[in-house]
Amino acid sequence: MVIRRLTVLEVDDAAILSRLSERRRGRSHVVRTLGRRAVAVDEGRLAALVRRLTEQEGVPPCVDLPPEEPPLDPGLGRGGAAHLWLAARVYRALAQLVELPARLPHELVQHLASLAEPGALSASQVAYEQVLEALRDAIQGRAAFPVWTEAVLPVAESVALIERALAEGYALEMDYYTAGRDVVTHRVVEPHRLEYRGQVAYVVGFCRRAQEGRVFRVDRIRTLELVPLPPERHTGWEV
Image 1: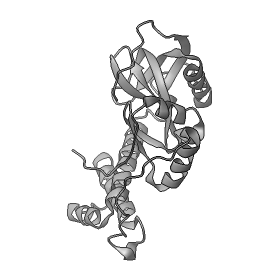
Image 2: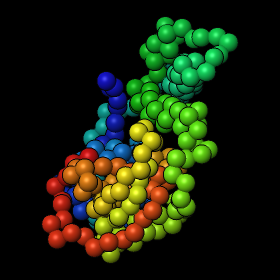
Image 3: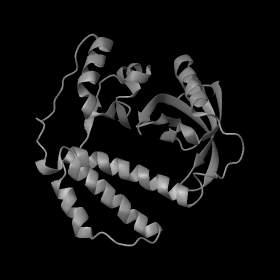
Image 4: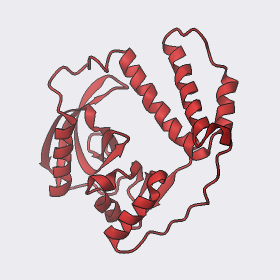
């Protein structure tokens, strides 16, 4: 159960998000898909996003955000408490995986959370989940020695195929590795857009195997081919 502060771009026409995702610079503003007509965006690049949407659509978007609050603890600098909270959480997670010489008290972590700005704390929570997943993969050997031993597509090649599928109207047939379950599954995905979370690329689309919207890490796609979209293409999905 997580309470997060998000900056959300909402549109009446889903085609606006599709046009935004046509180019890499547009996709770089999107942090997470919330639905077919809503995405979480990087608040730190809000001015650039407003300029891009104004240029793309011919009219500026309505920005309805509360005034930014100053850091709760100026002595730590902007975002300092959230960064320390992230470091403390990662250290405590390491203590569950390997033996460490000291343990951080839970009260310290709670105190750092109380000092952090809500937005910075939300971003640090996302980073914590990514670090924890990477740590588990590394410790369990999946990072260095993936379970799938066949040739893996370079990410750049996968991204190029996905961009072609988006531009020319193809579906994606792929073998996809799920790290949490340590399995590889075969899927056909109707792509909706590419997203970047930090340096990691994701494809957002409707998975015909799961019969619902899904988000897939591009670096976990093991094989990838373009196939024609099925006649009954699904358009009403939500992620």
